[in-house]
Structures are given as structure tokens and as C-alpha cells.
Amino acid sequence: MGGLYIRGAQIVTMNDREDILFGDVRIENDRIVHVGTPVAPQPDDRIIEAAGKVLIPGLIQTHIHLCQTLFRGQADDLELLDWLSKRIWPLEAAHDEESVYYSALLGLGELIRSGTTAIVDMETVHHTDYAFQAMAQSGIRAISGKVMMDFGTEVPLALREQTQDSVDESVRLLEKWHGYANGRLQYAFCPRFVISCTEELLLQVRERSRHYGVKVHTHASENRKEIEIVEAQRGKRNIAYLAHLGLTSPDLILAHCIWLDEEEKEILRRDRVKVSHCPGSNLKLASGIAAIPELLTRDIALSLGADGAPCNNNLDMFHEMRLASHIQKVQHGPRTMEAKTVFRMATRGGAEVMGLERDIGSIEPGKKADLVLLDLNDYHTYPSAQVDIYGRLVYSATRADVVMTIIDGRVVMENGVVLTLDKATVLREANRSIERLLRRLPDIC
Ligand code: GUN
Ligand code: FE
Image 1 (cartoon, rainbow, N blue to C red):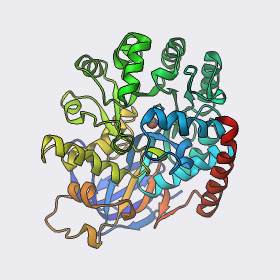
Image 2: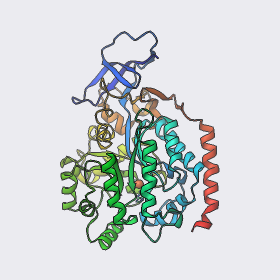
Image 3: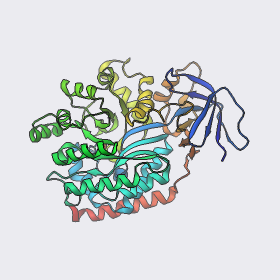
Image 4: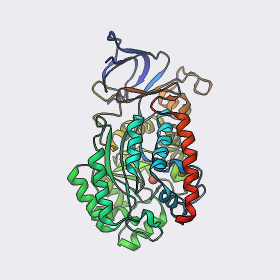
């Protein structure tokens, strides 16, 4: 089979030297084999003419809930714990196999269309096979798992699990999906957050994740009430409690990390825990602003994510990048979180958080071909002369500028069309599904 030959782009490599090149990229199967000066394409290569366009590493979002995409606009203007108990948990409890599938496809269409090539995703309690099926079909690279929750009075009965059932179902899914599609899909254990999990469940997650060598993904220290409840229930602050259980390690990916004390920041650094910063969600749920510049100075691996559609309400990495920068500048001054730092978080940072830094996050020979082509020849992105490319990408570009998305060496989006999905069907079934779930709600609450 022929490869892909991308000719003449401005290449933002994000390699160790952060080289910006004008040249060509050749892809064979799922890997980049050449970056830089023109070489002879192979006779059956597909040539992609990219002169005047910008080639970047695929964007990486490390905290997404595909199962919540259908709930976009159904839970506006609430703070986290009300948002969960009044709207999100009842809606998740109403999910069926088909609605999980279309919720995932809707989110995946949005992500791939806008240049996100890899995600860390947290599903709901049930029907997670259908989300994995959607991820497999879409072509995305993902680490995902069913959410685990076996504790909490406000949790609808349909979501409240027996501890052992939660672990057994996670292991069943792991054995089926971990490594699927040329390793494009991986499994992670996803306890929801401390206050919806028993200590027994968290200890089993520690044991099983170590046994299988997979990641653990959870929410932590997102909301003030959440950390107060943790402290009242468990006698420790949130991160200190996770450390006490032996869960803090380089394989732990924590979403949010807003409300941390000095000891907890030190635990994150010491145990090389990975952090996913979600500025859009943190602002809309009025959760707070994470101390990202400080965490960066402590050398903690940091990345970005949109979180779920009902707390953002988009899954748009360009929007997250801009917010990540601007919300810090108003507090710490204009030099904080400059464009290159943010772009690094969106690419190499994401790869490190996923444990995939050898495979993705930069454009280099030997790496997986997860690439995004942008056309910045428009009013809102000009002038192009004498302008820093990172500033153009983070402060001016929008998701509408993405013209091609390549994942694992395969073109999955071209000229605005996601080639792996049927858009009309996804939009129609998304509407049908949310209407069905909303009709079910009165029986759940
Ligand atoms: N904490 C526990 N569950 C959730 C969730 O679904 N979304 C967010 N943002 N925070 C959570
Ligand atoms: Fe979340």
C-alpha cells in the first residue's frame, strides 16, 4: 500500500529542538519515515500538496467524557455537585447501548474535525463496549475506561455498583479492548472521584492497574465542596488520601487539581503524577483556576482537556489553549503561559500524560503519524509575515482552520468531512437518543 507524502508545509515539529521547518513529510503505514528536505515520493504514495499550509502534531486532550456529549446544553449554569446529582448522573443512568454509541460518535466527530487526534476518555458505568466500538470506528487514538462508582447517596440506583461487579466489568472490558486496533485503543481504570468510591474499590483499582500495567484516570480536587467531603469522610485531603492508598504514581492521570495544598503539590511532583488541566470546564462550573504556572515550575507533567460537552460546552482544543493562557495572564501577568508553553502542553505534554511520548506529540521520523494540517490563509490569521507561529496557532487560529486530520497514518478528516463517520446519521441519531433519555428521566429521579 502506498504511503502519504505531504509536500511543502511549514512544519511545527515540537521535536527536542522545537524546530520549525519548511519541507516535506513522508508516512509509511502508521509511522512518519521522513521529515525535512524533499525526497522522491514512492510511485504509489498519495501526494498532499501543502504549500502555504501549517503542519502540526495532532492535538491531544487528556480529559474527555464521550458519553456526555449528548448532554450538551442539558446542564448549564450549575456548580459541580449539583450539575452531577441533578442532571449528569440521572442522564447517564438513562443511557442505553445506542445512546452511548451515538454520544461517542458525536463527540468523536467534533474532536477529529477540530484536530484532536488522541484522547483520555472516561465513560459511564454501563454500555462501555459501545463507546469503544465508536472509538474504533472513528479512527481516534484513545485511552478510555468505564467509570467506577460504588458509593454515594445521591447516585441513582442504576449507576450504583457493587464493588466486585465494578472491578469485574472493568477487567472484562480491559481484556477485550486494551491494545485494540494496532494499539490505538488502550484501557484505563476510571474510578469517578474519591467521594463516589469505597476505599475497597480504590485499593482494588491500585492492585489491578499494577497487575495489568495500565493507567488509572480519575477526577481530583476540582471543587471546594468535593475536597471538604473527602476530608470529612476519609480524614485526609484528597491527594494525600490517594497517596496513602498507594495510588499516586506515573500511571495516575488526574483531571483538574485546582484545590491543592503545599503537601499535595509535593506529592504530585514526588510521585510523578500526571495532570490534565481543563480551563473551560473549570470556569463554566465555577470550580476555580488551577495553579498551572506553579505546577509547571515543579516539573509536573501537564496537559489539556475540554472535559465533557455539558460543562464546556465544546470539545475544541483551540478554545482550551487560548483559555489556558489567558486565565493565567490576568492573575500572573502577560508573560505567563506564553503561546509556545501552551502549545507544548497541547502536544508533547499530552503525549507524556498518556505515557505515549515515544510514539506521539511531535513530528519526527519513527513516530506515529498523528498529524493535523491547517490552512491559516484567512482574514483572522493574517498577516502571516513576521508573526510568531505559536502565537498564530494559540491566539488566532480556530478549529475551522483545520483542513486535514491524520491518525495512525490514515486520513480521517479532509476539508471538513470526517471520513469515518456519516454525519447526517450521527446528528439525527444524537437528537433521537437525547429525546429518548429525557423521556426516561422521570422514572430515574
Ligand atoms: N467529578 C466527578 N464526575 C465528574 C464529571 O463527570 N465531570 C466533571 N467535570 N467532574 C466530575
Ligand atoms: Fe470530567
